[in-house]
Length: 122
Image (cartoon, rainbow, N blue to C red; front, side, top):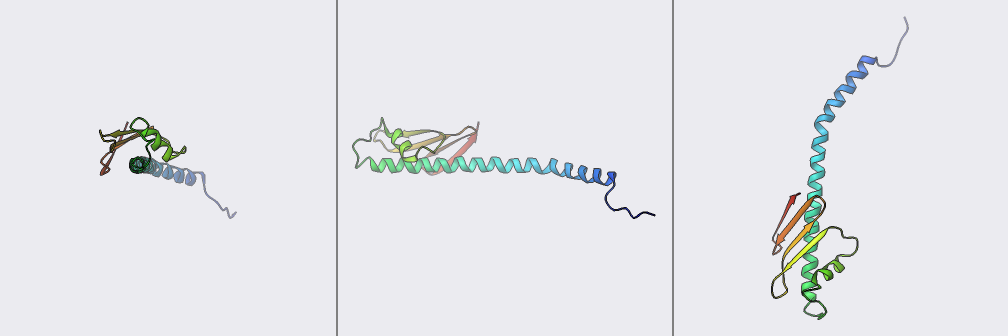
């Protein structure tokens, strides 16, 4: 008798079928992690916009060129050119920041007075 080594075709098909079943359960789980991570990035970017807006608000006391009309432009300058996303900053009548809205392709995040950062998907 010959001493054959290796796997039979049936054994290989069974292993591939088991891996396929495992993939059916694991891929959606990993997609959930990716979506959670994207939401956390959007939340962190909202905090960054809030911090930049508060920094510009404080700078406004010493820089007379900062007005309500160019406030958002000054915040974008502070954030830099690598910052992506659409921002909307709400100021009260005194020119103080009250609300920040940050939008990416998938999420919209908002904060009121910098306390709660709430994100929703589109």
